[in-house]
Image (tube, rainbow, N blue to C red; front, side, top):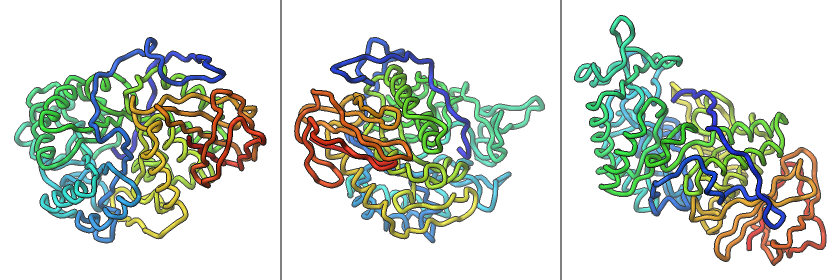
Length: 459
């Protein structure tokens, strides 16, 4: 939606388990507080998501204009496109000149400013031809004041004490009104509307603010949608985890995002990050996907740019989210050094100037897709922390799957450091992913990391 409150994780069990001198962050299934039976689409197992803001993407702000960028995104390595809401936007009580993307006037049509349904179908088909998948932003919590459901089914809405439609309680979302998810007719309608798009070619949904929706609905939705084809369902929520038991493939790692910002600004430490991962993988089963990001439409428009919030640490944290357990997200323009907060209710076109981060992100996407240890869920390896002599400044870990091993060293501080890991089980010859230089373990010399430096060694 327009701006979300900070999310909290469910209660956790924080423990560390010493294995060959390392701490394991995953693979301790007996202490998991919940179990997930979700079977992810095969194509999602090395997925990298890209959030598409059609309104701001091009000067034209249309599906057809965006389609011209698809070959570039293919070259970048993107394999899943998430389109921010493409529905017609409400006019009554709208915010700003163009209104909020999340004020839906019709769940089975497209915003005429973007083009036609046939235009959208053509984008989906072109993305599929390039080997990409397409998911839509779905808005189940509310509609615009002038959605046709207010006339056809006014009983599907929450009413205030005077019997009038009401915006979601506790928000400033005055351009939308709250749906009543206790109504079976509403649930049936939402299933049919989602089927409409899946039958058109859409491969899944990012579900906006699902907090007021019943988990049973999403379990039903998964069954009915996957009867058409495998779909990916992402919930914009970090708790409760009950949505992940049989419904969603993935939820948001909001706490991780705010922790990275805090470390970048000197408000938190590497120790906090280590503790975060201990509870993270004591809470979530290994097969659950967690969405990780340096920015998204909410954080960019309302919080600030990556530069303003993370500064020189951003490349180290980008390396982290592409190599740790989780599914990485790139927001529109992030790969081209998006250096402004995109306005939310008016046109504010992204400037596609080249920058030195484009190749960096291309390399990170390739790193993730080429190394089985970095695959999503059970397809990849668990994170195992590597001890160093500078654990207050350096966050280091490795992941291993079959014969593939990736070691990651991140200097999350403003000072250069030299480290010399001593774990014997890491012995062997590695290639530095970014330089191609060979490195043998055990080391004869220390590894040097510049301030906010990063090193990825692949075997």
